Structures are given as structure tokens and as C-alpha cells.
Length: 180
Ligand SMILES: [Zn+2]
Ligand SMILES: [Zn+2]
Image 1 (cartoon, protein in one colour):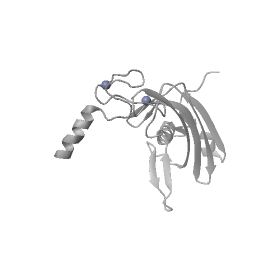
Image 2 (image 1 turned 60 degrees about the vertical axis):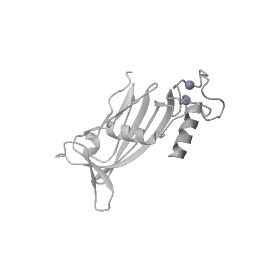
Image 3 (image 1 turned 30 degrees about the vertical axis):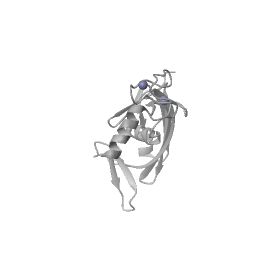
Image 4 (image 1 turned 90 degrees about the horizontal axis):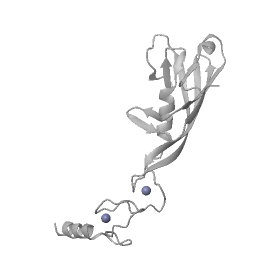
């Protein structure tokens, strides 16, 4: 069976009568979250369940994948496993053209949608990007880049940095700043 790459769920049935709809699939290569393109290592897998609750619908889902982030010290692409879980309240309004976030009288966030075939890419990408760490480290002991010549100190010893000593150029800068 082909793996489903569409990120959507069809709610036509539960718009007719109370019930539950389920969908799952995979995302290949990257996840686009607003302006950000988050590269993936392997496929990300998602699943979503939508259950009718009176006039509203409860959407709950999860997405699991590994994204590549730059190591904050040496900038090397570093795999970061991401496990994201999300829940949203939805309401069907046929006149709505695009998914719209509104607040109801109880100050709850509700998404209004107008198509029975609900596009899930926004929910999946939002949850995924929120679950990512702010920064990544390729290794706890990553030595980073030489502040003088930019060499990756994990792979080359350019001779500018001796142990934990402050590089000469930075020491000079420190002195200069003290005198200003
Ligand atoms: Zn690193
Ligand atoms: Zn250097």
C-alpha cells in the first residue's frame, strides 16, 4: 500500500453524524512552518483523530520526526529528534475560506474551518516547530570554531586556541575594551 503523503483529514462523515475520524501519513524531506523550512532526516510520521463534541470538534494529533539543526558551536548539521503532540478545538463554518483562529465567549481558542476535507499541514508544522529545541549541540564536548580563523576545532588544531586559554586576539581586544 502506498504511504499517504497528503496532510489532510476528511470530516464529511462526522459533519453528518457524531463520531470519530482518523488519518495518518508521512512527511518527506522537510516541514514548512511559516517562513521556515525544517529539513528532515528520514520521514516524519503523523496521526490525527477528530471527534465530534456537540457543535464542536476535538482534534488531537502527534507528529514524530528528526530534523537537522546547526550545532550552536560548530554549525555542523545535527539531527534532533522531535516528538510533538497537539490538541485543538474546531468548529465548522461553511462560509469560512481559510482556517481562522477565533476566541469564543469562554476565551478558548477555536479554529473555524469551511472545508470538510480539513488541511492539517498548519497544525502539524506548528506543533513540530514548537517542540523543537531552541539550539542544538552536535556533542556535549563540541569544541566549536576557532574565533580567530574559523577552523572546526573538532577536526583540526589550527594552533590559535591553547586549551582553555583565551586566544591572543581576544585577550588584546579585552585589554583594548578595558582602556576605552
Ligand atoms: Zn558542534
Ligand atoms: Zn584558528
